[in-house]
Length: 281
Length: 329
Image (cartoon, rainbow over the protein chains, first blue to last red):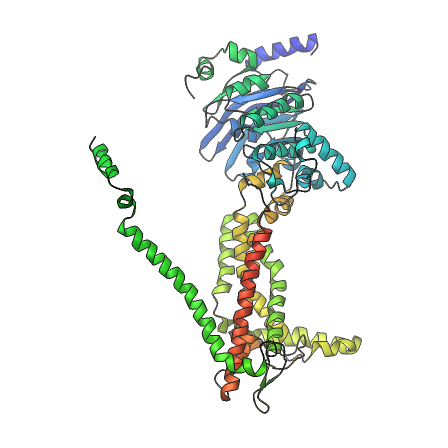
């Protein structure tokens, strides 16, 4: 960020009295990947997420923390339009991906989901497909059939997700034959194979043993140079270890967001401090 | 405090007194009794069928009877079931092939695409097809479907092929309306609800995570169905197909009313034929002599055996097609 832009950003942020860094009408700064403006998600009469504005920078990992039921996952799923699949969900506000609102009615949600990948809480390999087919499933969807290319991408994605050495001799085995941790890394490889710009991770390590968790955290660190990562986690240490930015959610509201170091050492909000120090949640 | 004392009293008793309550014993013995009696009933049925058909089997041979295509109750009193076995397999497999794609399509429509109110209506209408008594289907077939097929499909096709494709005519057979293809189509209609219902249930049981995983890869709705939903539910779909096959093999009334009942091979596409159930229902009242009666029983035994084989095959196939090995987390 150069000097003028940074000043401009500061001015805007003071004007809007929020964490928005850029001018709404101006072009997005190059390092900004995604941001939300007043995003509200309602299920019928209950509000899952209220008025959330936050930015996600390139080459950064953002951790969403907060007690159960605080809307982290709901918010995360709004970032690649997964709520479109649930009847009775109402979304207002904007989610900007490279400056374009993904909820614009001209935008096809399928193209958004190709750019914004997702890894779920539970590993979800396709049980009838082989390991290889699982990894390249997303590529086959866009019509890529060239086998040598697919093999190359598969290898790259598996190396990225630190699974390659364990499965390189049995790519034809069913995806469900792997252990839980391996399945989760397989799912990460599958999400990476389509080369997403943003990767959303919904408590990716919650069903894994410490060793697999470790590997996935290392992986997140390695990946962040290529892809913007947003991770929901219940584990505060994990948030502190892997993220650059942390956002604290409480009952559907974004309470505080900022550099991870600042949030964990010097939170501005009392609720954040209480949650981080383990007094509730 | 009081509860704790009761617990303490209870724990002092020997385990056998705490857990072996009379209620449990009665429940267990009832379950065992009913379970075993089903098995016994099946064995008794097979045994009676065998006993009654023994005369035919000893006279025509264990393999000679099912592999011989002769049915002569009037003059030579010679019997063989090949005609009917062929008829049953032809109509049943034909019905499965005809009904499979529409059934799966209906299931996908109601489970995936239709709004709730419409899927409820369609589901119930499809189930209603299964609820129609087969004799009603048969009478509808006789008075409506058969004449329509004869006038609008068989006759035009028959005359077209006599003009352009004379070689085809012997394969087509008599276009009188009653025949193999009419029975097969009606049979397809009758088994369709079973395939559709089981496919629909299997599709609805596909975990949300599986669908979301493919949505998240940027799949369209069609791609989600092809990539995640159908592969995941394939053993359920297969179970539906096999259930339908079992139904089709045993379906009697409608088939007997529409197939034309011709007891000799070869069968033709449009021409009349016969199946194992149809010959039994047509002839059991007027079975002349013991050997005729015994031969009908032997046909019944063969039907029983084929159903059993189909069921065993079904169990084997659905085990084989279930997810191979490993854990599903």
